[in-house]
Structure formats: C-alpha cells, structure tokens
Length: 499
Image 1 (cartoon, rainbow, N blue to C red):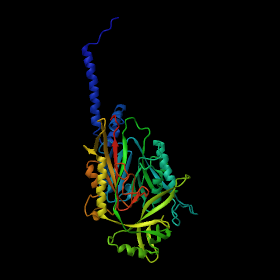
Image 2: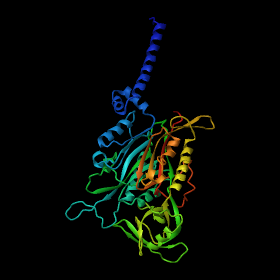
Image 3: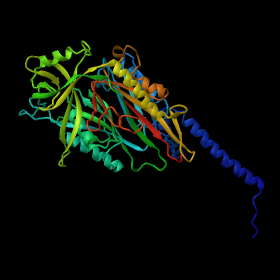
Image 4: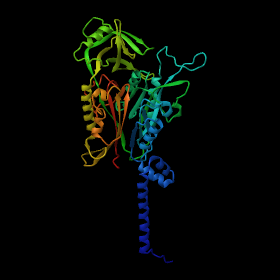
C-alpha cells in the first residue's frame, strides 16, 4: 500500500502553528508578570500551563518594602499592602514595624506609621520561632506571672528549637540568618549569648533587643498568643538553607555592617561588691579603679567620670562589662566565652553605682562609654566602605558583576536591606537627616530598604562585607548587643551558573 508523502505546504503550516504556540506563551508570560500579586495568585490557579508560567516568573528572589504615615491605621495598612503587592510575589515572610500612636492589637500593633516588608527567598526556608516562658498557677487556678523571683525563660529549649528546625530543613544546625525581636521587659543578654555560643559565625543575627511584638509561625504549636500557660519573651525569624531546593536555584547571603556610636572614657574599673535586684532588673555595685586599691562608691565613681575633659555633659552613660562565663546548651560540656555587655547607668550614691540589668559578677572589669556623634559619623563612613566592598563593580539596578579567571560573569544582586538603629540616633544626634541610611543608599539607591528604631541593637556576624573579621573587635571579646549603634543587614543573591 502506497503512503502519501506530506506536502511542503503542510510542513510549513505545522511549523507556523508551533511558532504561534511559543509566541502565545511569551505573551502570557509578559502579561502575567505585570499583574499585581493578588491577581497573579489567582492566575496561577487557572490551569497547569498558567501555573508553570507563574512559577517561572517567580524563579528569582524579591524583597518589597513600603511605608505609610497616614493618621488612620486601616488606611495606612492598606496603602503599604497595595505597594508591596504591586508586583508578583509569593512571600516567605512579612515584617510589619509600627510606630507610636496606633493601637497594636487592632492592626497588628501600630505606632505613628507603618513599614511593611515582604520577601520571597527561593533556596531558603523561613519560620518564626518563639522563646517561651511558663506561667505559674496560683491556688485559685488563675494563670498569672510571678515577678517575685527572676523570670526563667526556656533559653536552652529556644536555641534547640532553632537548631532542630534548621537541621530538619537544611541538614545543618546553624541557619543563614536570624532577625530577632525581644520583649521590652526581658533582659536579652543571656539569650543572645546562648545563640552566639551555639551558632556558626556564618550565621548573622540582627534585631531589636527591646520591643513589643506579635508573630505568626507556620507551626501552629508555636503560636501561643492567648495561651494561659506560656509567655513569649522573644521571637526569632529564622532563615535556613533549603536542602531540597530545585536545581539551578542561586544562593541567598546575609551580610552585616555595623556603625558603632559610643566611645570609651576614663579608666577601667573592677567590680568589688555586686548585688542583683531582680525585681527592678538592676545591679548595685562598688568598684576599684584599675591599678588602685581604694574601693569606690557610686558617687565617687561618677564624680571622677564627670570631671574628665572628654566627658559630654548631660548625655547617657553606659558601662561595657567584660564577662568571662562558662556556657553550654542542654547537657553538653560547657565552654568558656568572653563577651562585652553594655549596661545603662541609673545613678549612684554614697553606697552603690546602679546599672541596668543583671549578670555582673564580682571581679568583672568594666569601662564607661558615652554616645559620641563624631565617632558615629566615622563609623557610618566605615559602614559605607564595607557595603561598597560588596558592591564591587556595580552595574545596573542593584546588580553586581565580577569576572573570574574563565572570563565568565559571576552575577550578584542586592535584593534589599534592613537597618536596626538606636532610637537615640537620628536628626537630633547627628544634626542632619538620613545619616544612618546613607551608607546603604549611597551604594544601592534602587534597592528596597526598611528601617527600625530600636531599644537595643542586635548585630552579630562578620563585621565586614569582605568576609574578614573587623579589626576593631577582638575575636576573644565578642559583642552582639550594642548601644547608640546601627546594624545594617544586606541581603544578596548569587545566581546559579546556569542562570
């Protein structure tokens, strides 16, 4: 039986049809990529073909941030939502920072404005993990807090929860980064100390030491808001590598730069008599100046500090206490670590020097520090240089380019950043606007940036964008809770070689 050969006209028609289908997919990709996030999410549910196109559009990471200063909380919230959802995004996390003047429980907890940041970071898994503390049950079976003794948060459990979550999704116990918010009436020093001890130095911590927060975890067992048995004393937004990330997914990196804002004044002192007042969250102490034998009370110590030529009148004072402590998690063997912890000065009399917080011991050495805007300006310039090291040969909107020995382009994109700045900084401190944001915007003016004023700045990691330890910090004396400082978190994306 003879078989008729296809004519050339049929072949041509078939080729045209295939080309038309490809064109249609390109047009669909173009249209869907222009949709706002809500419409885009609906389009992704139309059919498998549209869903595949939507997934290809969402193959790259994205961070979106917006702020509003509208007086009405609902209007302000709607404004920032509309802005961050203007383009397609599948958020892995959302952070809403709210200013004074709004009712936090009604909107999420508002203030005099709101900053909303959402992020999609393929290659990472993200979840909120709280630090819990058990409440006590009185005789009448009503749950209340007990303040007669120092509160005992479940710090080891908190650290192990982070390690267990990270291990389950990445196979490694240390995450890429942590953004942390601490409760305003809880001393975060022992908490961050344990995290610092347990995590790799490649894990970057940033956050606000003293805040008010609400959170929502992907694991309902961690959501204890309204639970009569527990209180949340802190919450960590944990970013962990995804061991099951699709082939060809690039790498997200967290990098830290710091702008310190205090300078040391006067001689070192050694604590002699130390009393902790847990009810007030303070420490009472006497001390000796280094190299002297006379025991000084609070009045004598402060009088000498006030007489120093470089003492700024009517500014806050802090003591930076060098603490050598044994640390461990769970039942593991303890290890000695050294940290520099800042405590605010409350005052002094003919008996004691009174400082904020507890955890100081007899024999600890400390030095006084005061806010210094000149030192802060110099530190901002250094932070800008450190961020510029990440920038390298910048070309285009937030993109970096670097040629390797094979003359191929290693592409890196700055997705955005966060600034955690002391609430004492700003125009009144510097005598000018936008000083703290300048180091980031000078280098990446088009990248989204969110700013948070803090009651204590958390900043821990390699303190430069070159991967080298800062020369200003001794590796033997770690510092992760700061005062009058600004911490810069820069989030970047290195594309996979196939992209």
